[in-house]
Image (cartoon, rainbow, N blue to C red):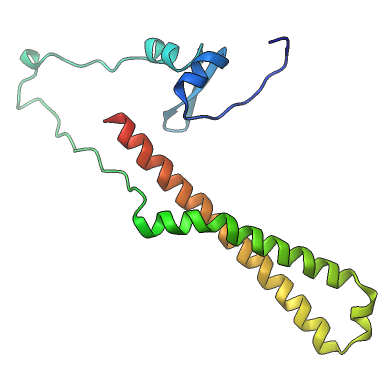
Length: 155
């Protein structure tokens, strides 16, 4: 309560946001971010409401064609299993990367055959690449999960 600095908080817990924050940054679409005073419920009250003409004032000939909103992709069963397994995979790869760094830092390695040194270095590079791919996939699947939750909450 006495902290005078700024904290950037990201959460899907609306109650938590309402109870903690003093202002909210909201992605409005089209790469626009707006600041609102208060939490989530305060943003709901403050946000601009789209002007909706009454049905009586809209002539069918004048009405622009309306596209149905696209359904956001949500996580399938196999994707959820993959997402659940990724943290363990990443942990395993990070552990192997650490061990390879230790091996590469050991002067004894450089007393061995050149082929051993090259193989260790090649494996280290492969693990780095696998880690980057795992992190990218984790981010992709996590975004699908969030989009699915958001579309479910919007209904």
